[in-house]
Length: 171
Image (cartoon, rainbow, N blue to C red; front, side, top):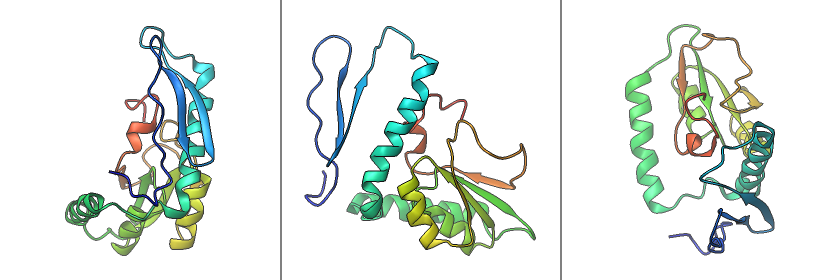
């Protein structure tokens, strides 16, 4: 169920044959052509990433307005984060991969972690920067992190982040 105030708009049903259509958020539409028989071309990867970023940029202002079932989901998720990560060790660094508006990053910061976050969406990162002005936030893909290997003590990737990448195993 989508709130009437939600920026999401229903998409048209796809035509028969290879799936093609429009993914839409009020005022932002991106043409997408998918095939279940042909592999994606590497040249199209930046296009998909920018399409995902555009979709989330359009939702940035209201992204934290949660549906009631999401409130329950995030309450449980945040309890798990607190229980599993606990207080940061001295100098502990954590990465929130797909940080969005910094919802989970704020929990990491509250637990004493030096928090870093990455997201594809500049709009969501702008909200995160207002929420957490001291966090190290960067626009990047979870498939190509802009950090050296093993430079974090903890990494979290919550919510639906991996649903929006071309190669979740690579992420």
